[in-house]
Length: 115
Image (cartoon, rainbow, N blue to C red; front, side, top):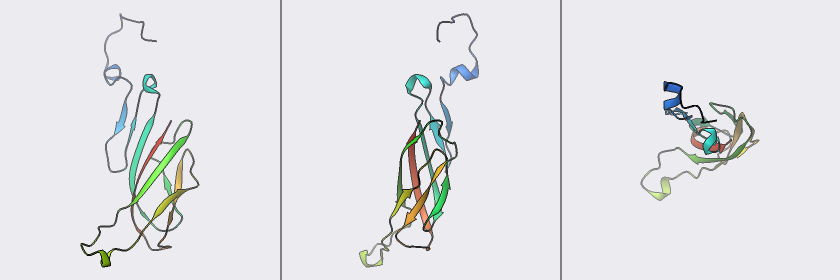
C-alpha cells in the first residue's frame, strides 16, 4: 500500500511495477497505480482469417487492435497492391486478421491496448 518505509529496496521495487518485453512481438504493462494498462505489438505473416495470439493474455479485456499492412510499397503508385486487414473475433487471448487479399499472405503489423 506504499506505507512501509522500513523495507529495503529490491530490483522488483526499482522497476516501479512496470513489465516490458521490447522485442518484435512485445509488450509494456503499466503498474496498477497507472491503471494496469497493457500495450502489445507484433508482426505476423497473415492471410485471410489468420489467428494471432497475444504474447500475454489480457487479464480483463482487450479494448482495441489496430492492424496495418507490412508490405514494402513500390515507388510507383501503379505498383502498389491494395491490402487491408481488420481484427475480427477479438478476445483476451488474441484475434483473427481479415485480409482483402484473401488467402495471399503478407506481413501485417498490429498493436493492441487492454487491461
